Image 1 (cartoon, rainbow, N blue to C red):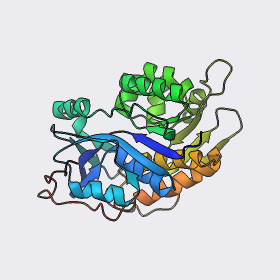
Image 2: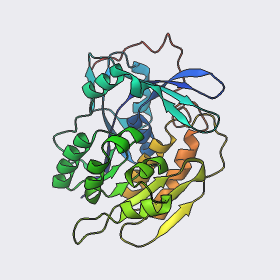
Image 3: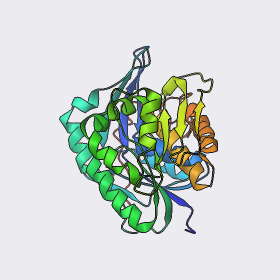
Image 4: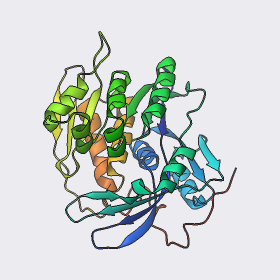
Length: 306
């Protein structure tokens, strides 16, 4: 394909992030936002396909555009945006209180990203964590259009829809779960063995996906489903301020590097550098200085509907 654009399909949200010291900040969030910024930082021409409410600050959209993220595929609805509540513990554990909030699930349903009818402008698409049915529908459309798909998941979908996710792996170019998610998808296996099992799930007569297993503070484990090789990338030294979104930015950057022709190891190194950059600031501010934390009074400012 001659197209060199990358599509990120995902969610946007207004996040309240609480660190181990008890300090809370309101930041722009959602896997789609971090993946799109990561891909743009890696040099891709990116369009973000997502949905927001009128409470999503207009300044955040302007900042994304200034950072090189196209918003022509951004839908705007009257229904309030997703609002996530993320807690980071001193031992590295992450809590997601919004998973217990019916309002978050309803906002997720209302703001499910709807892919564009015409995918001819895109060479690669990143499918951020989404329900299995949404992912399956998008994979079918991408397959018909010859668009390579890099997919991520999260622990809630891996734990409740694991079998459906596994059935879709043969249709992916890259699968990028965290170590915790692979433990849910392949219980009883070691982390290495689980990643290898996922990478071996190709269609009849074809290779499996490249698997990039995110291991947090321990780095990345990458396996080429074609059997070319596997690589451990130890984590880079970082002054961790806020780990929110680092994995999502890693996935977006990996997809961008792959689209530009980088082999898995080189793409992994690019992705790791960008993912490490994320943790050095609050929210996405290290990727985009125009996206600093907001006070609670600012977070209610609505977008400008175009």
